[in-house]
Length: 191
Image (cartoon, rainbow, N blue to C red):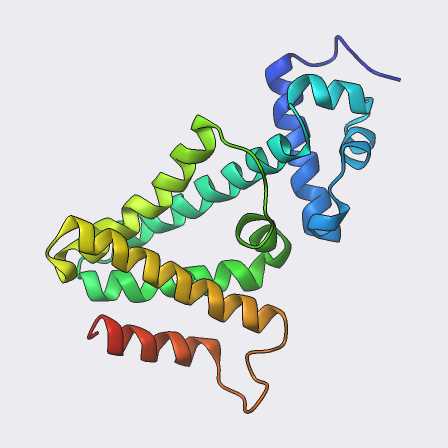
């Protein structure tokens, strides 16, 4: 039974996002459904659809939270390390660690297609991506090249994480992902 007066709309939205995150962490992206989230919230699925247009809207909200958290990790790296090459190495390490620490949230964020576009989601993406571009800019000397290099970095990290999580990174021989990333950074960015 719904508890319509227990929470404001904003509180319900945050509750739905937290319950959705909990479900993804416990069971992976495939466990995320309106019925499962509503049940965990103690509300009906209809309440959830009053908050989000569809499940992709909730997925984007969960991903926005993950991006905001990762952006804070990057802010700490930028605060604690002054040299661009050290920052870049720490950013790459943080990305690998995020995938290991929160594999289901990483999959929801980077390997699960969604059809949703919102200002909050775009802003959260830029909170991460713009910081990486800022770090790469002194190495690239040009904003356009820095943005392209940031995409190449994310694509490389994503590929390594995706292969690692699927068990296909070490098909022919074992190579630690950290070592592969270090080699990439050394060759591509001349670290």
